[in-house]
Length: 177
Image 1 (cartoon, rainbow, N blue to C red):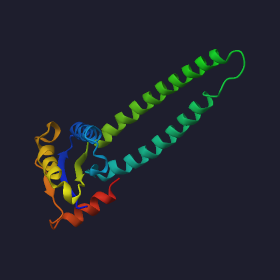
Image 2: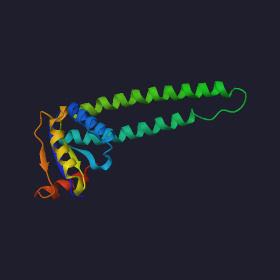
Image 3: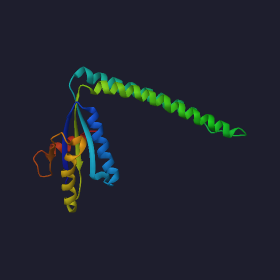
Image 4: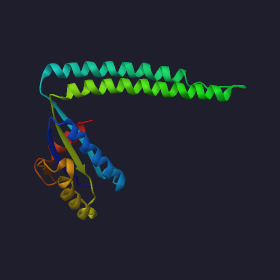
């Protein structure tokens, strides 16, 4: 299947990037596109010190997330005997409080992520992977995506299968996570 890529440069506007991601995900689900429409982000760090602190912060977040998982497992033990219903209610309350705690921690980590992402340039790469007999659908999506709300103010770079930049763009897309 020949692919086509749309590359949008959002600069440092992380909120617009997330709106665009949400829009593309809703299209994938609503139109049942599956693997025909895929997105990846390329984030360029403007300062080297911020990149090192971002890696350290990610390791710290992974450790704290592991601790949260263990505590929620211990509170969700099955109950036996006469007081099973009250024990189930108590376990459910424990789950809810664990969720509240983890959401509070994730809120803290997202705030630090916003601080870390403040100095990053973000490019959104959209891969349209339609087969040869779906040329009309491919063209309609290539025309539609740049006219939608989060993408409207940006000038996309369109890389088609026959373009000389295609191989580089394809390799970049495959290396991004």
